[in-house]
Every structure is written in structure tokens, then in C-alpha cells.
View 1: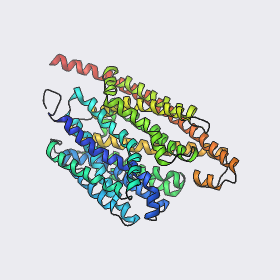
View 2 (view 1 turned 180 degrees about the vertical axis):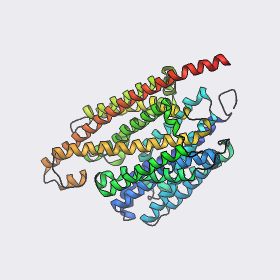
View 3 (view 1 turned 30 degrees about the vertical axis):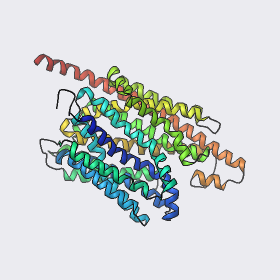
View 4 (view 1 turned 90 degrees about the horizontal axis):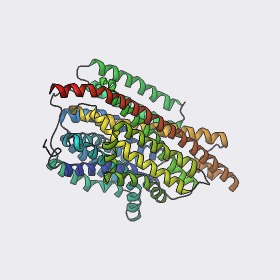
Length: 499
């Protein structure tokens, strides 16, 4: 490390790894606009489309902890380069796929590369920046997530206007090649100097447990929460993850040191991260449906109307306002302010912009408030999680951070979707399995209006539940983080006196 804040080329390296991460995140959102093309040209069924999306998410979420552990052990630069290579090869296979089965397999392969990239990029940030600039660097890293969310549908729509669907994958290849060359040339190697033995059983248990749990959450709305298709994988996930926790407590070289959960700073940041993604994931999932099915916007138009949330995050973090707030207010108060703003945004969408009579301006206000809250709270929570974990375990810390985001997002979609469905079912009786099918089966305009109103009412109820969850999560996270800070102060003072 240098005296000027870390590695001498740290900002250039940050740009390289953000480019790599952006490619992964764009691929998550860009696929949504290609669904009509895939349905027509590959004759993909609804189930095929779901697996094209879920194969990537399942593999990535299942491997995040194992990928982070492998990066710590074998070298973060090596695994970052491997992730880029695998992602590029998977993109090539996806772009040239001639059947739905080939595309699903290619997406699963891309998920392996995505897991490596999501963990190693944040771990490298922790290694090349010192404490004086780390919050700003993490804020810029986190901004890429919002940029990917906003730009994905827009880029996908532009590509599909001029090319066939395979180009949404093939466009990843030059970016992956550029990133791979830059990583090999610029990024310094770092790994755990202790060289712990690989925890193979822990890696197997975490992969099986997380994959089963995420699968249950993803498929719950489709199959029903009490169906065997959901309850069996959910039970497997719970049992295997419990076995994973017990094994990690016993093994001398744990993949995830369970004693981290005794650290109130870590637990507070974990609670906040899960609940903010709970509110955000469920809200975004339902809002896109509301814009398209109730208000009648095309996918690209809906994407443009969702963009202010991401653009707010990008502007606040690129301008440095978000990180400065963290440095000025401290982590606990920043998390409180940020998550309160997110909750206020959700409430605004519910009360002003959520109904069929609501205006887009109410939704716009909610999106800007949510974007402001995310720009403030997310870097603070990510920094709290990573700083609570020893630097030599940075890869595992990044894996925990990514796993929490996946888990909270899936849980938000599941729970808020269930709230919407319950409210919808209480207001109207329909036999169709989805809102578009129910609207198509409606006998007249009056019935279609009742169905739309019922869906909008369900959306309002779910957004308010999300707002309460985020607000409570913010207060809980801030309380635990504040307690952790108080506990750390005497120890820091003793260290200073001894020095």
C-alpha cells in the first residue's frame, strides 16, 4: 500500500472491475426485453423462459460463498480472470444457441462466471483502497448495480431494434476480452496468506443449500407456496444450510466463520442489507407489471419510467454526495436516513402513484426517494459488512454480501407477491393464472376495470408492507451498528494508549 490511499493505479483498476461487473448485471436485466423474440424464434414456452432466467440466478446464488472462498485461497486476480473468461465463453454459447436447452445450459455456465465476478470485484476493491477512500470506492462499485438495472432494458431494446436476439449475449464478448486483458495487466494478486485448507464439504453444503432455498423462493409464485414443488426444495435448503452452519462451527478451516455472527456490526449490516433488498426486489418486480399490464406501457417505455431510481443512485454516487454523507453522519445514522427514504419512496408509490387513478408523478417521487435512500444506505452497509470481516477473508465477505442481495431480492418478490395475490383474490374472483390472462378472459370493459383496480389495490398493499419492513429493518440495523460502535470505542482507546 502507498501513503496516498492504496494502490497507485487503484482508480483505473476500479474502472476495469466495474466494467466487468456491469456486463454481468446488464445480462440479468437485458434478457427481459428479448422474451418475445425468444418465444417466436426458439419456440420457447413459458417454462423455458423461466429457466433461461432462473438457471443463471440459481447457479450464481448457489456458488457465491464458494466462489468467494476460492478467491481468498487461490488468488482474487486469478479467479476474477477466470470469471471473465467463463462469462465470455458462456455469452458466446448463448448467442449461438440453436435451441432452448442449449440457451439454458449456456446461461447456467454464465452463472458460474457471474458468481466469480460478483465476489472478486468487491474483494479487490477492499484490497487496493485504504480506509480513507474505501467508502467512496464501494459507493462507485454499488452504483454499477443501479446503472445495470437502468441500462439493461434500454440497451436490450436498442439491440433488438437492429439485430437478432443473439446479439444481446454476443455484445458481452468484446467487453469480457477487454476486461480480461486489463485485469491480467493491472490488477495486483492478493489472497489469504494463511493458506487455509479448502473446505470442500462446506462448499458442497452451501451450494446445495442456497440453490435449493433460492429455487423454492423463485418458483413459489408459479407453483403455490404449499405445493410439493416448493416445500420439498425449501425443506432441503433449510436442512442443508443448518448442516452447513454446524459443520462450519466444527471444522478447523471453515469456509464461513460462523463467529462473524457474534459481531453486532456484521449482524446489523446483514439485517439492513436483507431488508432493503426485500423491499426493493419485491417493489421493482411488481412495479414493472403495474406499468405494463395496468397502465399499458410497452416494455421499453416501462423501462424508461423505472430509470429515475437508478439514475438518482448514479448521480448521487458519481458526484460523491452519497459517500460524503456516510463520512459525515457515520454508518448508523446514514443507514437510518437511507432506509427511511427508501420506505418513504415505497409509501409514495403506494399512496400517490400505485392505483389506476394514480399519476406517474407520484411514482416518480417514490422512485427518486428510493434512489436517494439506496445511494446513501447501500455503500454504508456494504462497507460495514466488509470491514467486520478480516481482510484476508475479503472474498468470503463479498460472497456473503452477494448472497444477502440475492436472498433478500428473492424473498421480497415472494412475500410482496403473496401480499398482492391475497389482496387481489379478496377483491375479485378469477380462474386465470396471471393478470394478463385474467384481463384477456374478461367479458367486458367493466370487468377489465375491476380486475385492474384489484391488482392496483394489491400493489398498494404490498408496497406498504415493503415500506414497513424496510423502515423496521433500518431502525434495527442502525441500533445494532450503534451498539457495535460503542463496544469498539473502549478497545480502540486502549490500543491508542498502548501505542
